[in-house]
Figure 1 (cartoon, rainbow, N blue to C red):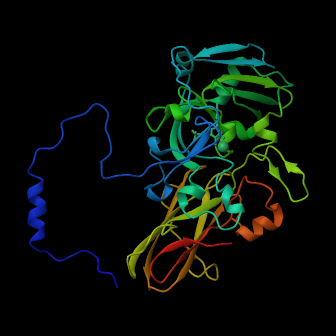
Figure 2: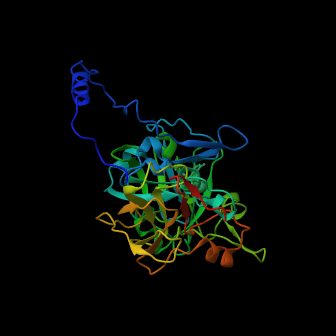
Figure 3: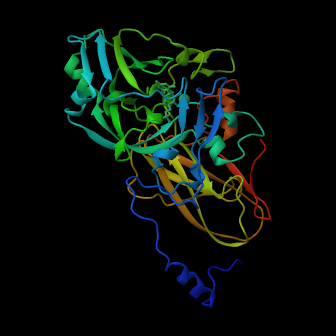
Length: 387
Ligand SMILES: Nc1nc2c(c(=O)[nH]1)N[C@H]1C(S)=C(S)[C@@H](COP(=O)(O)O)O[C@H]1N2
Ligand SMILES: [Mo]
């Protein structure tokens, strides 16, 4: 068994002496310790501006992703927007088309809430075998922040929806003018026009100065650098909701507007690429989330799914937010297959990869939420299972 801690010895004195040198002076905006190296890994598309960067979730504590490590997905780079010049136009099937400045929006009653954001393409590599080597690369297109903004409902009340209004086309101010058709309905009760993230203005990468936030739905519809809401009776069927972010089924038909991010979880420690230094005490931990509301249960298996036990959830469990589970564990040094399985308040249970593929096939790269198994070898190495 690996021993925890060392007995008192002369080495302690040397360490105390180091602390006698004067430290760095004060600073206006803090930086993390130079010893901390966690970083986003980037994957570029054909141009350097388009692509995604994945959050190092295995190195995240608690449920909040540091803003500087929030995953990114840009189709045309990060625009540099002066908030004093930025406006939001709301028009179409409304009684009073209006243009809001950022200052106008900030005069309206605001809310702050913690919500996860996940790309519909997160874990897309898990549909294919021999992929998903670590948490960052296969689960890192998800993050969780505290968002502040104006409830969408408030601004829609100000413009006044006409009875025929059923959709709104959200449009970004980036070079690709990214658009998505958003169905208007009860699901938007908790939607907001967000300008704050983790206590400060949105990061440029997250849509500064304004983004649409529709908690629980796929990231793509949460349009960043939001400059226009066109209220319509029908969707536009734009590229990102037809050829992309739709689910091609085994029969060749595609499901469109599959916006909900279903219950999902992953063990972040021990996880792929890590190594347990020896048998003994550890804390198994990970993250669970669901677009349908609260996570009610996370079970963990150490024997590849034959037996499961409940993992305690950090309180409070928040709606549509990362939920942290932790379970003390003594590793006996023998090979193990560990995995987590989430259940949400709708009763939905996270399926195995095989169950998911039996229904959805492998044509689609989107909305993978199957159970992820990590193998622990006798040497302590943690690897993904080659499905
Ligand atoms: N205007 C605009 N909005 C956008 C995008 C974009 O490229 N342009 N990417 C979308 C996609 S695909 C995702 S997954 C999320 C990513 O949000 P994040 O970069 O803040 O993590 O933003 C969405 N909103
Ligand atoms: Mo996305």
